[in-house]
Length: 329
Image (cartoon, rainbow, N blue to C red):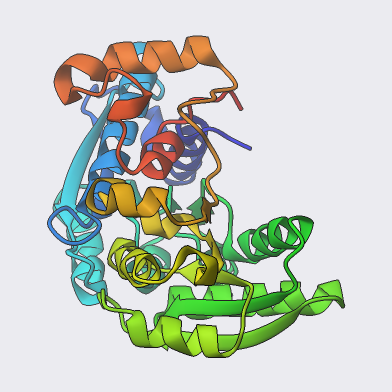
């Protein structure tokens, strides 16, 4: 898999070669846009992506930039609103001259931004948003790139892990968004493919909802052994609170998509989360790096400006790790 610098470089260089811009001699910066949520429920995720992207761009610039031109990051805040995301995408291109745009945490916003990306012919790159239809979008040529696992693969992995631990009767707890729908399909297909497991209940809840006791009660009545959680941090907090109110013997194990850690989930839930059997899919661990030396160099770069000097300082690790690939491609 390409690192984010490689994806950025490839996408930008391809655009330049097509437009002829790369032949110019100007040293003006090449603008990369980032549109994410910086004030809402997933602000920590947006900030993690910003830090990771900034570190990646610093690395590219230290190596001479793209054909001698440095990169510059311009950031906008879509506040988890798809319409604002579309507006911001167009502004990043028309006003700031962005030649590629990074998306934030939310798949619904990233999917909405596919329209301006393909209308304008601008690469749109997702370090986080995982909806399968972000890439499988029907556009040809396709300007969408992703540096993450897609929902279709995440569903199979979660089901496989639950099966490996001996669970066979599952409950789905999903937020009612395009991202939730994408995961519902992936999980359902994966369960059906096993030929050994069954879905006891599928329960939906609203975006931003953080009280899930009724939804958890519905899953318990279906006698599920394990819950697959597709939720933003608020939904995850609601599930932890609901399960914490139950006797330990009545709490199903939880297998969660990484979207739950898009903000300060662990800080908010604290001791409660530690008492829940909760397994969260992530594609990189700052506590068990495969390339310690490269991770050390990353912390040296981001320690002073961002006060992230070690693994325990990282919030929303998925965003930071994917936006600045700590593992060599």
